[in-house]
Image (tube, rainbow, N blue to C red):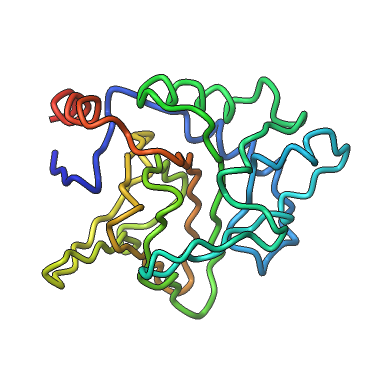
Length: 212
């Protein structure tokens, strides 16, 4: 299994993609066709909202200049770590606990990104996320032509397809310049768990040894 410091599959954890898709379909309003990224965990002010709207906290790109930007709500990503009632005892929350234990971290921000097939290809644009140095991504729906793009300091671009096989992948997003590419007329659904601290170096090396 290929592996880089910025892309580490975790095959020792296998997730149920169908179960996650079922929960996401119940949570994310399909009418939000213009929103690509949904915040599933929320700011503490909205934990008890009876009709929580996951469109309230969409993501904002952070360019490679390391400027930290706030969300449209006025909050920072690191503040959006509280679980709304609708997600209590969900599989999404269960996996959050598993990933926190695996990485030795806490306070994960959970998001879902959905690209619905359109006539136009889709990419975010190369960027870094210094406020969120590590993320665990789960591909739930994808195609072989859809891939990550990582730009090395040499300028070389590494393209990696993440399959929807239930294997979560640890992505280093804080320093590694990255982008995604989704061809036209293609649907891509990713659930991701965002951490606001770096994984301990010793633990990171252990994970790489386990998965090699």
